[in-house]
Amino acid sequence: MTNPDTSGGDATFRRLKSVCVYCGTGEGVDPAYLQAATRLGRQLAGEGLSLVYGGGSIGLMGAVARATLEGGGSVTGIIPRFLEEREVMMQSVSELIVTDDMHERKRTMFERADGFVALPGGIGTLEEVVEVLTWGQLGRHAKPVVLADIGGFWRPLIDLLAHMRAEGFIRPGFEIDYRIATTVEEILPALRSAVEGESPAGESGLADLEKL
Image 1 (cartoon, rainbow, N blue to C red):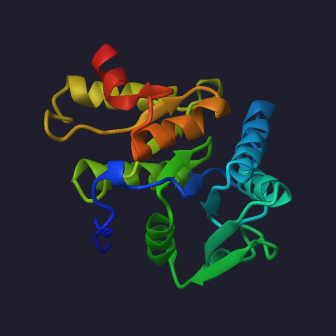
Image 2: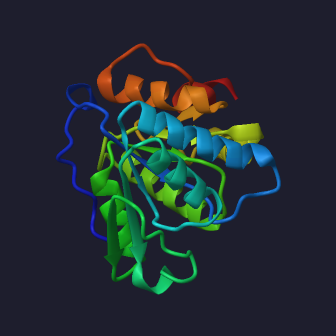
């Protein structure tokens, strides 16, 4: 894949305008996941932030998009052509972008967003958030990433990252920079603190790795 654009520059000179949300096309077994997606969509709309997401209408994807739209917010859905039916493409979004493949989808989502949130999801969600974390580790961008650890969903990944660091595979100078939010209310403040230099809210991934 082509490297992402690094033109965003120093995060302290940017303003948070759009948020990319990675999440599952299923709802999961815990009702808290769906509730979190809905609340996040409402908060995005309420704070005048645009949602960038995968373009589907089912599962957590559909919930966060519908809640944003119902709150009067702007939603950009980005979906590859071969997933139009499988993920039930949402036609009612503010802007719909149909890409030729997954690589173009992910790059477009990256370019349209000022920050990233990973809600609970499956292997696709995991792959997306790990890729954007890797790009940050390699210095290809300075956009913040928040793991929405609803009900402890992302704790196994957080523990794995700590294990990688303890075993010498995440070395000084190549840290993984992310933040952890255990409630929906912590997500947007954590993103703003990273992008706009405000007082931090939520947990820093770097600090978390130091503690574990």
